[in-house]
Image (cartoon, rainbow, N blue to C red; front, side, top):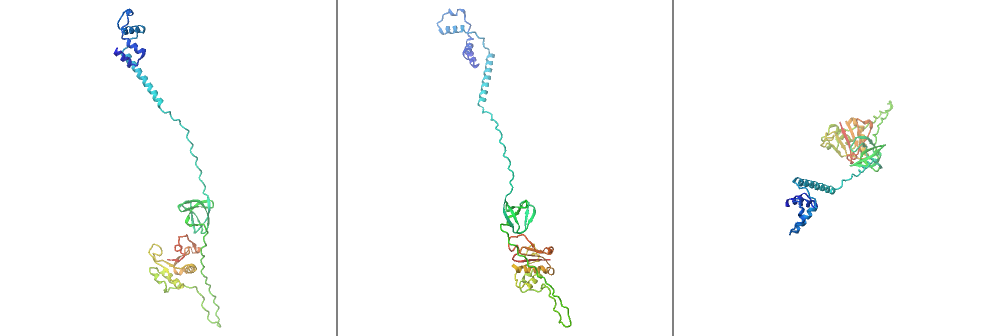
Length: 326
């Protein structure tokens, strides 16, 4: 009885099926069971109940194992169903949002006009290649774009870049014009006659003097012969000038002793510069710079040419005439 009931419970059989298994071990009732008497009423009641139930087949070990296997499968199936119910629903792919449309590049806006304070390079990009050059005092349209000291400009129908430090909102004053060297005309010599006195000699251009000067001669130390000749010529022609600059260490013409600075400004400076230009051949002069302009022997036919702004009166040669010799 104990083994059969335990087997029924392990097989998961309860109720009438479990009772059938339990009662299957009881011996079949006899026809005389109803006529027997017993002091144990429970035994009689159980026998009568068994007589009304169908007699099940005997339970074997294989039947129990099959029932247990069926139960295990059923439990596994129920557990899987519960797991599926507990799983979150699969996400529904939402339609991808369209990428924002690319904005077309904006055209630079012209915001005003400025003036070049010196001959000014126009480049295709900041620090790029030079495409054209603006004249000093030339007006140019500027845009709303800048880049680390560079200003975008519109030249004709083309955008370019210039160094912003050479632009000014006001038109610069014109450079002082050099005074042309006076032309010397020879006085016609009259035809001598026996009755007239001997004619006076014709006037000749003032020639540079080679004599040493009482003022400024200390500057000649370290200068070449041609530079010394220029110093003495200027000192003799313009005795009111007493300040000069000559040799100084460096890799330029001053460092080689081939340059002289005549410390003068204004109209007197132009007088000195033009006089030196007129006598460049006899003094061995190759270059003269004054008031941000330059004259050279190689391009002598072009006259005085403008120079770029170097940032100060001294660097632009407004306070001295610079002379370089061969």
